[in-house]
Amino acid sequence: MARRENPEINAGSMADIAFLLLIFFLVTTTMDVDSGISKKLAEKPPKNYEPPKIKEKNIFQISINRNNELFVDGDVMELKGLKEAALKFIDNGGGIGNPMPGEDKGKACDYCTGDRDETSSDHPNKAIISIESDRATEYGTYVVVQNELLRAYAELRNKLCQKEFRMSFAELEESYKKGGRKDEELKKKVQFIKNRYPQIITDLDPTDNNK
Amino acid sequence: MSKFKKKKSGQPAISTASLPDIVFMLLFFFMVTTVMRETDLQIDSPRLPSATEVKKLEHKSLVTTIYVGKAKDKDKYGSSYNRIQLNDKIATPDDITAFIMNSREKVSEAEIPFMTTSIKADKESSVGTLTDIRLKLRDVNALKLSLSTQKGNTISK
Image 1 (cartoon, one colour):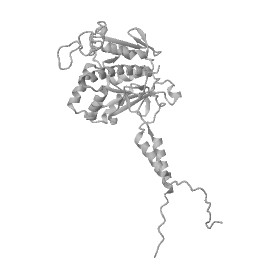
Image 2 (image 1 turned 60 degrees about the vertical axis):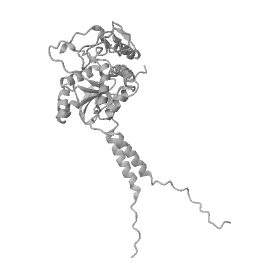
Image 3 (image 1 turned 180 degrees about the vertical axis):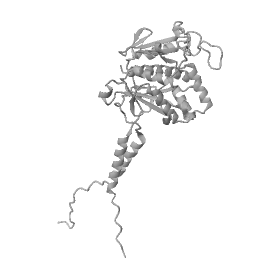
Image 4 (image 1 turned 180 degrees about the horizontal axis):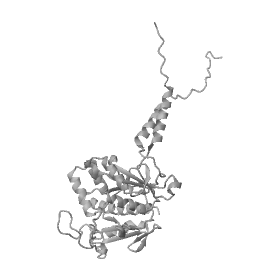
């Protein structure tokens, strides 16, 4: 018996199903931000810890007060000038540095391009940047200050990397990460640059006397 | 007089056969770009500051998040931008130690050193709150920290 062709399934409700699924996803998910400034915290010092004596010229003191104003070594400074000032401080190379890993004696900095002022830091691996902020300072300002300091370090590292390996430090790190952090050659190069300009940024705890 | 009947039909209707395709494409876009929200925010969504030197968080399964911002329930918690949220309720810095220990138990021994703590704080919250969190994290030895920021230019002042 000839039968009529089976009626086709009505596909008009497919759009409705799709809309429902879409609304479900719109409601239950967020576009999360997954990037940020990474910091390695220092370990908690044991009781009766005596901080090592550091020459004042090797410390770059930044203070932020509750009105989000910046003071560097006592003088007011605009945010715009912070990166340059930090760069000058780190790259100064006015004396002898700490021994590099693998060596036992410290040497003078042979890659620094700074003024070699004797009243500023001795060597990039001795240059400490310390941030002291009031408890009521805005977090936004704090992040901006951290970012400017990291930019200074990034610029110095890029310059050295260009000179030594003819590529920017960012590219070097990218290719190292892409290889799953296994390539020994790249690892050595990344460590080389990092040891020459180590990021030494400390936050002064405002309630030091409560420890 | 024409032999042919001029059939003046109405304008041809727009075919809606491709409507489901468009909707599916939108759906796939959202499925790919968004993250399933794990916790309900008890605080107003924090306005993250922007920075340029940002790094992506790796191993998202090893990340614990601490939210800092203004509570939605203003009568109970006040309206300063300094409420801390752990998991799904408002807490104080002292609860951070237990919170981190709990999240460590869910991870294998070998992976504990790779755990990162991400702080999503509103840009108007105080550095004092951040310091409290930082000190508690240091006590628990959770030393890898990431301050959540959007990628963007900061200095326009």
